Length: 396
Ligand code: ARG
Image 1 (cartoon, helix red, strand yellow):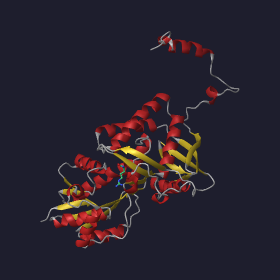
Image 2 (cartoon, rainbow, N blue to C red):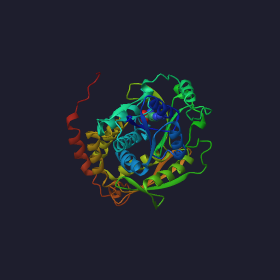
Image 3 (spheres, rainbow, N blue to C red):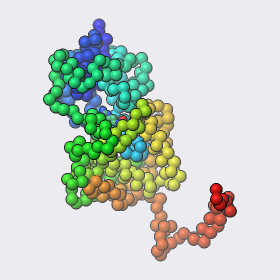
Image 4 (spheres, rainbow, N blue to C red):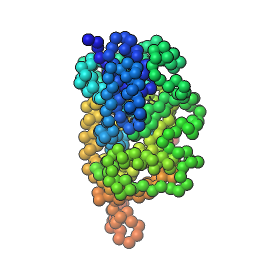
């Protein structure tokens, strides 16, 4: 019997060529597609995979699990990488890797394969996750080692091997899509000074095209998880889908960054995460209202670490799981509603309310009803500043 390999298949050129390449080397290839909200034509890709030589195609709808166990965990943690990336691609890799392992075990495959290059983060995320779940599986990464050095060589190979691909379409960028957002890189973006054409953006309108009137949205959270949009209860997948449309129309959710990859390269990235930005800001605003100062400040450190662990492919690791427990502990009081105004690319929090609010008007007010005893401030400041009396050094 031939060795079986489960390949993370996207339907694109690289992974189509991989099916043939592995088949030519004597493997039986099972193509695995996870639906994480990328809206691919799975039926067409299934046909393509079989026509290319896959012995079987497995498609799994992982959208609910993706939102519940990955996206919302990151949201509760406040994870954002280098201030601009809400980690859409990074969050999808561990769930896809888990699907590869599950499929390999079910199909009796000793190998899993992916189509990542040797220069990116995704190879790390796939492989670390696979190894953490089932170290007996062997991993094949054809793109890292094959002889096809350029895209035209791949197209040539595809033609020679009758691989059904669409070679007429130019592929100006490398794009990864899921429910949480889009990541775009390479091509003309490799010049960090180059301003991308408007047509690079798929989920967000430019300022010129964005709605003239502001859109107001209300998001209700329970234990840090968004449960209602504009007063209507919605499951995670539909809440994100609806909100993405509203925010995208208002031009909210773009970032353009130079980012530090794990493998040491700086790269230019364009991201769109319209629902992500609104939810990230709303969640932060609600935490500001409901968390005490020390928890809030400490949680900033956790958010930083959490984003690195996610970005570095260390999702299924003891530290990340311990941080989830800490985050969940803090979220018990993150209940309430945030109102936001989305307009011409901006997303502003304009209101927040919570049954667990720590805001006390009677302490904050400068009007009647003030219960704060200002006379206590004098003693507080003296003791607070005691260690520093006369400590200023002239001409240091
Ligand atoms: N730089 C981002 C990350 O490391 C996005 C990677 C996107 N992948 C792609 N095939 N376009 O998560």
